[in-house]
Image 1 (tube, one colour):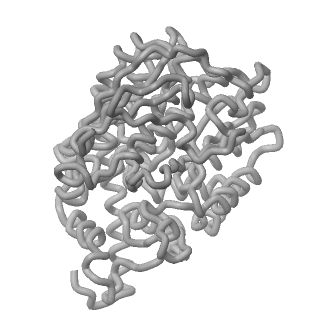
Image 2 (spheres, rainbow, N blue to C red; image 1 turned 90 degrees about the vertical axis):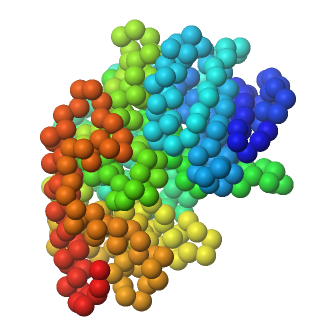
Length: 440
């Protein structure tokens, strides 16, 4: 095994088969998960079809591989070459879906992926689900504890529907209490007949002691893990659409500079990513059972999402209790016990959205990027943002970093970016008033 190419072999169960020489074995036990929350024991009202089990297994294998292979070993300290072998029930379908899957992986991680599919020699054992057709969920959506997913859940919880809204949550280490707090806020909004269910999962991958493996921190494939888990639940509960709520600014995530192009910026809910993910599902699903993955906030800015959440009945303090930061200080061994650094692009977009809706933002941040005492190494995003806001931005910029699907309409996407830039300019003006005389 070399740094240029890492080979990982996903086992259906530990000990079921021996990986080829020079391949590193992986399986579900690498996830730090309670036994009751394992892939075969989720509390769903019916078994998922084989194709959905396969999709979930592939996504879990990809995410584990992403964590096990350090970008520092790449020739450019970013790009990796990962070869992955995964057992699936229908290899022929997955071979048909391979071009679309490769497009998803390349877009979200920026790496070279060779994924091979081999027959699943043992039938999946499903110990948890029972079939109660009248109890099936009506909707399935991701619920991260972030502001966007909170806004969508709040909006849907207030509808007078009789069937449940099923929310898929991946626990954030050190922020479980925060996620529980915002979930309870949504639960308190629901109509009496509107039921709310939650499926909680782990995204923590453990590394064996003494293995020498240094976990990769970027985890760009995390969005695929989230989406596949939601699709798996939807397939089990006969729901045809999965919602991945993300404001249009961060879904498109236009690079502030050339150094932030490609997978250096998150592309989990970019229209190009969702287009190819839906192609994968269409290729592997049984005829007539495919599920569509959609972003209901694709044309809304962060401020407009804040307004949706507030109009649904959530007070400002609940919105401020959400988690938006890309690199929360509390995740770092020596960082303060705060959920937001205040300096990354997601934090700046969050600040602009709350300011747009409420006129202020009382979230405790570790730092303010306009603080003149901060070193230049901590204010790079703020300076890049100000330069980006001073430049013209148009259709060519929209597609320069990542393509759009063939059926995409550029006009609404251009409009959401421009409205988002207006909110960000208001944040800059607000910051300048607070720090007069600060040089750009």
